[in-house]
Length: 337
Image (cartoon, rainbow, N blue to C red; front, side, top):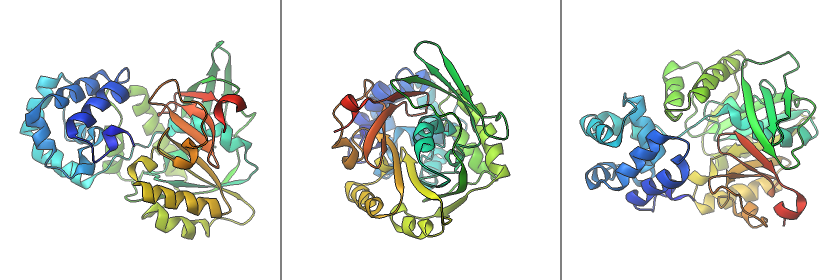
């Protein structure tokens, strides 16, 4: 578990790690805020009034943005936070980090397309379900030599175009997979038809990432045209019931991205054991130490400490940028144990 999401870590350590590893180079605003919090005992004392799982930097900062915090340096942010803490605290207690980045489909697609279809998709930790539409988005893959490959849905180019830089022997497919059913599980499902829920998804996007913000809105339009069923509940309690509802003749793929880090080790191992006995393909995209069944089979580590490990049926197959911007496919000699 990363220190920023580890409820047992000291708050100062959680924010320092978030600044140095997760926000560095990706959000100057959040890096400055996190570094400031890490050295500010007054703000730490305020954040420490929250339950430990709710002290996560991404949640506190998103809650602040949701309630009106402007992009600023740390001094201005600390003053704003002190003046508006009641609203931020209420938002932290009633919300969770449910980043629903459709661009993650770009790193999932090569694996999904290689699985014999038609496919029935189940996403655990689905949020509003925007990653359940890999067949409805367009893709632009660019390799290190500048060559590009474009893929579009059978109906034509999508308003959602996902850009992904690739390295390694990425099996970019000739077309998109056929998806005949899509469903999800979430502790607190968000609705693409609820503007308050969409506003929360917007607040979860880091301040400088305007491309992601525009993509979110376009993906919401796609999802509104074909709503996926997302059931409320714990993934370990709901997965078997939901699987039973998948259509006969389809290959069921259970997938998740940046979800299992929020489970304790016992819940993660229970989920892994359940999937091992179910008639499904399992596609995970998580931090490199999050899924023991995956990390035990790795013979190399990502070049970037923030990269996720993409694994099919617990076999590592690629390293991915957490928001889907880059994909490094592993050759057998450096990826698999």
